[in-house]
Image (cartoon, rainbow, N blue to C red; front, side):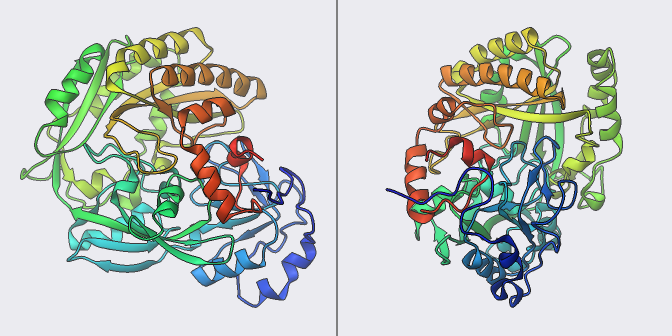
Amino acid sequence: MTRSRPPRSGKAPGVNRRRFLTSGAMGSMGLALNPRAAFADDDDANIVNDVTLLNPVHVEAIATPHTTEEILHAVQARHGAISIGGARYSMGGQIAEDYSLHVDMRSFNKPVFLDAEKRIIRVQTGMRWRDVQELIDPHNLSVKIMPPYADFTVGGGLSVNAHGNYVGLGPLVNSVRAIQMVLASGAVVEASREQNAELFHGAIGGYGGLGIITEAELDLVPNTKIVRSIDRVPLAEYPAFFQSKVQGAPNIVLHNADIDFGDFDSVLATSWRRTDKDLSVTERLRPGGDATAFGNVKNWALELPGADLLRSAVIDPINSLEDVVVWRNYEAGLKMSSLGDTATSSHTFALQEYFIPPEKFGVFVSDLHRILGESDSNPVNVSIRHSPKAADTLLSWTRSDVFSFEIAYDQDSTLRAQTTVGAWTRQLIDSALGCGGSYFLPYQLHATPIQFARAYPNHAAFFALKNRLDPNYQFRNRMWDKYFPG
């Protein structure tokens, strides 16, 4: 298909910025726009960045809609690029595009309906998961699957098809009943497994490439008390431990393991089981969604000489107290902001994640140890989780059962450091691909287009769908500029 595609950077052809900002179509609907959009210097509010502070993007205008009608009118009035952002926890330019209309979804955050008896909630997608918890907790309900941090937005979680550490449940798509979308054509469309199924499976995990997800209908489950248990397990034996002690065990709700960087020989495996024991923490939700100030101390301490010893002697024992009993909603309510300042002008904490079939666990662990050891990397933590097969989305990151390895690391903010990180990241991606696995897309864009294509073999079907739904390539961001052909 031949399509008229705006240039990858600079002003889109045929768009008069001043006319766009003062047009009656935008003004008549009451859409909130940054008043200095399109005329501002690079240091004003027209710069859209993410949590790493490594990806400043100068956008043309910022819309802050409150209703679906405002989003629809913004799309219909726009002739150039449109980018979409939520809580801004992606790490590689997935939320913004140069000289785009940036749709900031954070004010689009109201409930649509809650059916407590049927355990279903429908919300606007700018709502944060913590806000969803506040709505459902009085009904003693929990979100079935949530990302690991409650200050992400629902739409952000859907766009990356996030996963948490819920045992046996897999990625977020497995708890989504339906979505509503605004498309480039100006249509407002409902999509589910039964209705517009291709759109449903393309938009979830589609990183804003097909349109704007405006509403989401989610499954809920009963809120329960859960108790924590800790096991120190040799790293090589962890897959067998997980299969025998976690995967088939009754009542386990949450589980993850953390590699001990002191010796890289063992993991601290943490499980949360349903229980009838008395609560250790009586609050139903974390106060304000935060954990404690401990996250700031931990981040500061892990930059000091001897950090591995400090972690094994002080931090891990604090985190390893047995028989802690909390509500499921409390444990699921951790905010990423509780970890402290993740970025400054000189450095940033960043993440990347790899998905490895169980039979290749040892191969990847060996490569991980070698590559991180030989490179100028500064890993803080490697967390291991598990996901069952979930291959129904077009850009699925798991086509079989996998263990996920989430690497948290500290890096300088210099271009030289970004180049160095890119080199060892591509080595890890090659290792994951060689194991028959994949990598996660919300992070820095170090993967080559060839690596992307190998990791996401259904990308051609996704691109074909995008060409049909968005022939002028309006819904775009820096990630799609790198990997979308054109």
